[in-house]
Image 1: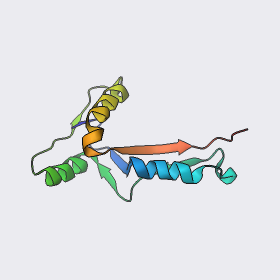
Image 2: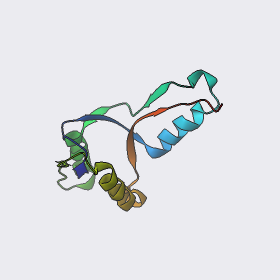
Image 3: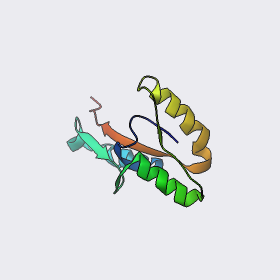
Image 4: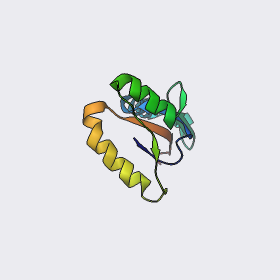
Length: 102
């Protein structure tokens, strides 16, 4: 599996429906305006650990392979996600920033 950056980087993953639910729950909350909300699953894993979990689920060896450069990584990963998301579901990681509607 192609990963953005080093395979040893630790990430907190979250399923797309859970990320969407967090966004919806934050809507209309004036107390959150301008704050950064960290979203992620309960575990922080390296890409190597994620590949190991995929190996267990799929019953075959899955290897994490780092990209050569950060340039264009987002575009390549977006293409990979679009190709596989309908079949396997999607995982995302990161945070979102709330802004006021005024």
